[in-house]
Structures are given as C-alpha cells and as structure tokens.
Amino acid sequence: MHFTSEINRPPFEARSAYLQVTSGCSHNRCTFCGYFKDTAFKRSPIEEIEEDIKEIPKFFGAPERIFLQAADGFAATYDTLMRTAELLHKYVPSVKTIGGYARIDDFIDKSVEQLRAMHDVGYSDPYIGVESGDDVILERVHKGYDAKTAREQLEKLTAAGMPIIANFLNGLGGKDYGLSHAQLTAKLYEGINISMIEVSSLTLIKKTNLYYQKTKGKFAEAGEVERLREMQEFLRRLTNRTIFLSDHISMPFFVKAPVPEKTPEIIEAIDRIIDEIGEERLRTHRELNPIM
Image (cartoon, rainbow, N blue to C red; front, side, top):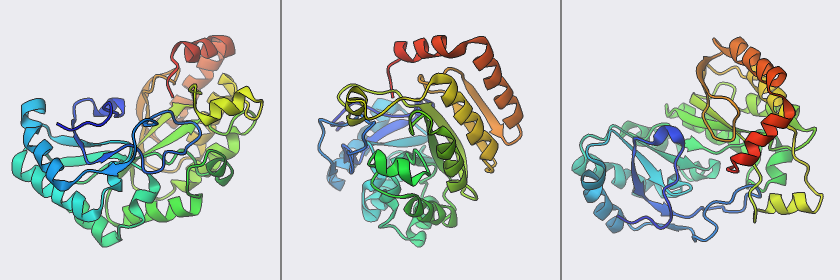
C-alpha cells in the first residue's frame, strides 16, 4: 500500500483501516504544528487508490471503518471521494463508515447536496481540526480561515446530516488569553451536529514557528492551572449534546463522558486535579510527554 509518510490518526481510530487519498497537508502553515513538514501535498490518483483498496483485506482483515490518510484526506475532490467509497464497498464489503482528518476549507468546494451524497455512501465523523473559534488566535497561528468561514462550513455539514468530530486545543491562545478562546470556540460549535469533541493541550514542538516565537519572547505559554481553568470555561459554555473526550497524552486526565449530563462532574474533577496535583507536577507531566 502507498503511504507517503507515517500513519497519523487519533487514538480512538486505532481499530480502523487506513487508506491514503492525499499526501502531506493542503495548508501546512499552522505555527504550532510539526507534522508533514517533509511531505509535499498531493492528491492520490484514483488508480493508486484502487490498488490500495484491493490490498486492505490483506493488511487489515475486514474493517468496518476506514480512516483516510494524510493530514486532510477530505481535501480530495468530491468525485474522487465518491469513487473511493464505491471501490471500498466493492472490494471491502465490511466497511460501514469512512472518516479521516479534515480542515475547514476542505468543504468549501463541496455543496450541501454533495456532502449529503457523501454521507449516504458512508462518510461520517470526519475529524476536523478547528482548534479555535477566536479570530485573534486563528490569525495568530495562521490557520488559514476565520470563525465566520468555519461556521459556514460546519453549518453545511450539519445541514447535510453528516456528524463530525471536532477538537479544542487547550492553551492555544497563550498566557492570559484562555477565557476568550474557550468562550468563542464553544459559541462556534452551538447547534452543530458534533458526535464527539476531543481535547488536547498545546505543547510546543521544536522547529515549529510557535516554538521559535517563544524563544524570541514573542509568545508566552499558558500555565497548567490556567489551561485547566480554560477547559472548565469551555465546558460551562458548551451547549452541544455530545461526547467529551480527553484521551490525548498532553492532557493530565482521561475522561470520556456525555455532556452536558456529566459536565458538573468533569468540572469538579478538574478542581480536584488543580488542588491535589498543582502547577509544578502538571508541568512535569507535559515536559515528559512532549507531543502536540
């Protein structure tokens, strides 16, 4: 099978099968990201995709879910994605759903009708790296779109009936900027069909632009307790009925729970972490697990 770079997927996609439909990242300018820096973006030809699909049973058995590779598999064209689904159902009949990483702007060239057709053939729960709903942060980290654009595309996906997995990158605003980040991101997600929200905490990776900014005194990281207060604010403001997932190595606690039903319990648990563990030990955890 063709894999231009290492497999990249969230922890909960460990049992999925993987299929490369693009290589690299279509944007590759986010200041905090260290992935795919040595891989140029390209879309895989359908002939190559078909070859790989035929090999999926050999490597993955009879998977029920496919997680597209690489940084944003949904940057493939609508025609390619539809043909890919057709070939998957032909050669790997066990497949029920197709996901993958996605950027907000991967959906600009796809209409509501096209997204609905994609959902009908199995596309579901793309993992969209929205990161933030705060325009100040989005511009600062060079995400390549603003909150208005993000909202428009998220509304299209919801109108098409396609549930998504979204994220919240805790601490992305830096020192003394957490509450706005939390509030505006929760607001961005209001009314959107989000099946799960995964949270992680910003960890500066060497050779990234944001790490360089820190060394030059142009960016100050948020403290550990500050980040957890930000997370609590995000939970308080979140109105979506969804699953809140904290399973990333950058996070000091694991939880997978429905919200808002469990929101008070999660907030109370974070209070206990702050009181019982404290800033220094939380920081040590991050330094021993240097992954974004």
